[in-house]
Image (tube, rainbow, N blue to C red; front, side, top):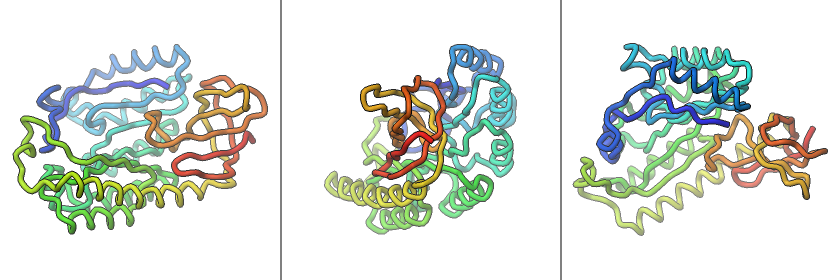
Length: 297
């Protein structure tokens, strides 16, 4: 697995985030530079390339005056050694139907959509200066799932943003329950100096933030367990990352998990020792939290 950073900086100006102050406005790296780096990764034996930036969906808009993420993926997909292309950090309001359709047409691009939404209440999204609203987010997710029946959707949520009331939080919980995200991470709000939100009033107490965080993660844990149990009895492709030669257990990931220790892993009882970087097929026999367990088919 290898990361490919396709841009630097951010121009979104979320009120809680200091990244634009630290790293400047969004700047795409030239496609020819990225393709050279991708070839280098492929030559080293990398099978999965993970595209990252503060906002991958915006790639190319500054250099080429149009969205070029799908074009970049099409070129990377031509590299014979690359098996999977995973895209992280996609800004939902810039993920158009055209972009979703074009990515769906590239077999090596995984149906994995990392959409950091941050909240599920319109008033909170506005306070965070997040573009779009809950209705448009739902429409985007619905279209992704129509286009990619096996889509994995990951998101993050901020709990305890200044001004967040119980009603705002309850709206977030309802949103999460309705959307049934495959992966969801959350964190409690903390002030960042020189950001607009630093001076916002009405920040919940730490005890309230922590209580809401635990409630949100309990809801998501139940959703994750239900969604993982769907895979029991099914065969999945696993990219092996480590091998325990004593227990004959390989640990790896499927298309459903990014390599950042957030999404969970798959433990596979194998017939013979397997080299890391190898793809194997496994039958899932049980699920535990975010992790799946199975045996080599």
